Amino acid sequence: MADEIFVVTSSGSGHLFPSIELCHHISSRNYITTLVLPSSLSSSVPSSFLQNPLLRLAAITAAPIFRGPDSDASRQQAVLELEAHLSKRLAGRPDPSSSRLLCAVVDFQMAWTKHVFWKFNVPVVGFFSFGACAAAMEHAAWKARVADMMPGETRALQGLPEEMSLSYLELQLLPRGGAGGGGPKLGNQPPWVPAIEGASGLMFNTCDDLERPFLEYMSKEMGMPVWAIGPLLPQRYWAASASASLLRDGEVRHHSRASSIADDDLIQWLDSKPRGSVLYVSFGSVVVPTLEEHQQLASALAECTRPFIWVMQTGSNQGLDTTIFRNSNRALLINGWAPQLLILSHPSLGGFLSHCGWNSTLEAIGLGVPILGWPIRGDQHLTAKLAASWLKIGHLACKNGSGVMTRKEDLIEKIEILMSDIDVRRRAMELRSKFENGFPKSSKVAFDLFEDFINQR
Image (cartoon, rainbow, N blue to C red; front, side):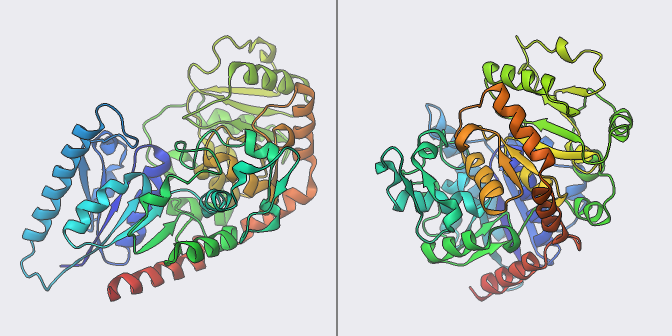
C-alpha cells in the first residue's frame, strides 16, 4: 500500500480549487491523497476526482473559521469526525510497516486540525492558497510597525523589494482585513502567524517566476522550508494556455453554474472586436463594490470608447441604471456567473478590471492579460500592488493606490492608460511566456524537495 498525505481545505472556491489541484499533483507521485473538506463543499468536487484510485475524500462538519456562538460545538464535532477517520485509516493497514501517514498539508484557515494530526504523530505543513507577497507584506508591515506612520510618510519594508514600500495613504485605505479576508488591519499581527506555529514547512500557491523575493522572505523569517508549488490551475488550463487556444470553462474545471450567455454567442461577440480591444470587468463571486462605486463605473464605461464585458453578480446591480448600455454593440453585460477562462483566453481581450483575487490574477497572468486592479478586501490589495508595482503588468484603478474609488473621469483615464500601455502588455506577454511549457519547472522541483523532506522525516 502506498504512503498517504492528507490535504485539508477551507471553505470557498478560492481554497477548494487549488487544494483539488494540489491533490492531483501529490497523487501523481504515487501517494494516496485524502482531501479533507467541509461537508458543505462535497458537491463541488468533480466526480472524476474519485475515479483516481489514489484520491479520497473525507468530509467533516463545516466548523466556522473565526469563532462565533456556534463554533465550539461544530468544531468539536469536526474534531471527532477527523479523529475517527484517522483511527480507521491507521487500523486498516494490513502491515504498519507497509505504508505511512507522511504528513498533512493544512490550509492555515483550518489550523485547528493540526492538533488532531499531532495526536496521531502526523507532521503538519502549512498551506497558503494565495500568494507569498500578501503573507510577506503582512508580516513585514507588522515588524515595521507601520501603524505608527505619520501623514505623508512612506516606509520601506525590511527584507522586501523597494517597490513594495508602503505609504501612509495606503496604510489608511488599503486593507479592510488581513489576508484571506479576515483578521486585523495591515500593521497588526497577521492572523496566520499563530496558525502556522509548529508547522514543519510552508506551501504557497505560486512559483519562483512570480514571487521569488517574497518566498525567500517567508523562508528566512519563518525559519522553515518554503515550497512554491503553483500556480495550482487545472492541467487543461496549462495545455490550452501553451497552445494559445480558447479555453472553455466547462472543459477545464468542474462547475454547476450557468451563464446568462452561451459560449458560442460570447465567442461570436468577441470575434467581432479588434484584437486586444476589449476590457473585461469582473469582481469575482464573493464581494463587490458599493452601489455608488458601481454607478461611477457604469458612467465611466458608458463614456469611454472601449468595448467591454461587465460581469454583474446576482443582486449587485439593484438600483443601477443599465439602460444606458441598451442596444450598444460596444457593451456586453453578463448577469451572475461568467465563463472567465473563455473570456481571458480570447485574442480580442486587452485588459482585465479585476478585484485581484489570487485565482483570477493567476489565470490572467498565465494568459498574458494586463490587469487594472480594483481590490475590495484582504490580500486582494496586496496582490494588486504586486501586479502593478513588482510584476509591472498593470495599473491600479483606485486613486493613489488607495481603496477609494476615483471620479468617473479618473477611471476613464485609468482604463485608457491600461488599454494603450504597450510596455505593460509586453511585460504581461513576457511573463506568460514563462509558462509556455505548462506547469512551471521550478514548481516541479519544489514538489521534489517537499517529497524528499517529508520522506526523510
